[in-house]
Length: 193
Image 1 (tube, rainbow, N blue to C red):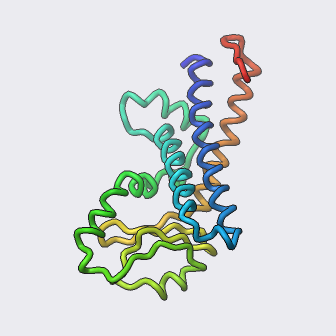
Image 2: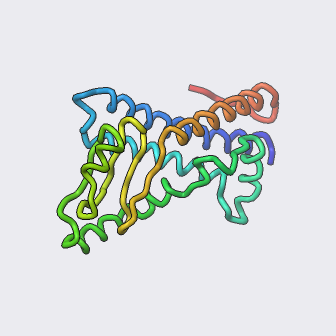
Image 3: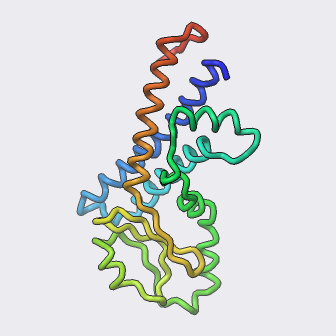
């Protein structure tokens, strides 16, 4: 892969890292504002952050044969570990199957007496409110920074802090590599606005 291709690839992944991290910043801003903490926009910001995080993971971890050059290059410089939250497919599965959550809610509504969609103080609050009769659309635990949702009858969780930390590490590594490519290459010239 030549330097221009490396640069273009890194720049693309970097853009999604930044978009994801900005989404998480918007979520944090809302979580610290008493007037905004229960605003529905928090779910849009969280989904935006997760979507871009999933895109980053897809670039780095794609199992597709035709992606081998890309993934090998990105894994070599970014060095994700097996413990990386990007290796879990929770965020991807939440977003890919978002419609199925509603199918379960709509089709099995007789089994539920309510729905949970809220930012809650902590797990104790969630446990108090949750019973098998409430469908968990989406819950964010403020203290633990854990996102909880339901697919069919299964309750699933995504710890947000490790995702943010991993994306920030990737961002730093990409910035270094982009700077190295910009400063050490005569193969291409960048026009910046």
